[in-house]
Length: 170
Image (cartoon, rainbow, N blue to C red; front, side, top):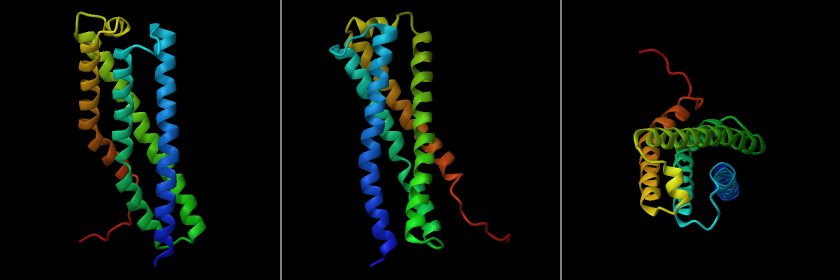
């Protein structure tokens, strides 16, 4: 049995659950706060709940993309580090990757919602506040689709900071 691999597996499971719950709860709280403060939307609005669900799903989709770059980083670190240092570096690198993916998701959400609202003659958040489920579904679909389209680019960006060894010139 490879003890470093076992440690990685345990760290990945524990960190996925704890960080996942933290990130999703944080996202939920931020979106609820913005909805109440800036748009006067209460928690029991079905249309806004659909929109919040799309945001949470988008965050989950984007964060799920960091697994492969994180494993690549671990494999490179696994060759040189002790178990304790390996765990510490894994957590540190994971936090950086999560921050990049989370920031990208927030930017995608803000940009897509802003652009869509500028391209249409209606006020989307006014419609969501009035519980217009159709508008909420359209905005949610756009948000999820743009997240899926941008995910590979964000993963590539994260891959670019994985500490791959330099290859000799051919």
